[in-house]
Image (cartoon, rainbow, N blue to C red; front, side, top):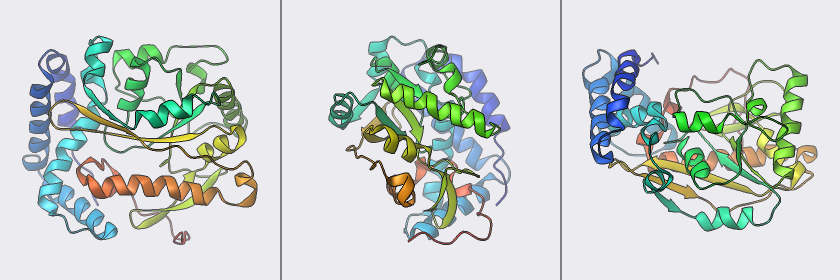
Length: 311
């Protein structure tokens, strides 16, 4: 497939970010869109790579979108993705929250009111760290069960500096963790949920080894982590899927879907694959509707031979 040349773009973001945080949000959105256009049109080789990736996504999803139009918008979507939540740095809570249009908050509130903890089921679609930022600004007791995000706002970095049994510092995970370390992380995550807190975890994490199940996503079958399924089954915490995307005018559309539960016997009866697929299907539906927010999904490498399509 070939790799997009993004070094110049990352450098431009580092240089421009202090300026972008000081200008009105519609202006910063225009600048980010322009960086996407430069990366798509002027960086040698990138136009063909973007269009090839979008064509692959269109064919795998069976859609009929215009490859060139989507590829151009995807280039800007990727700049938004790489900027993470840094454009919200330096804002007051009121100013930052004013950048969000929220849909389905009642689903989050209803799940949280049950006092059994909440699994906030995230992903790598669109502005995937903005739900985290919004949750902290709104005062929810949130913890992340994932690898430590890089290049995030100073605000998020400060929220991560909590220690102790229910702190964030020791909850970040690593692909290099030993089985003992991984088991310890799951126990800490269970304590978070049993304390009635919100645990954010992604549904689309490709993984190897134990606690995995096959899932069909965008034309291929991969192994995905089932950790979120196990945690939901063991704690009884309701699962609330969430998605976020920029609107192109400096604001973000944040959506919470209706909650659901994972039965306690799911890890034992072989039904984890069903819930993994349910999470992936929700992501795929967002990609169908907003392919320009698919980030790097269309450039995922094809899986190793041996995985069969999930029914």
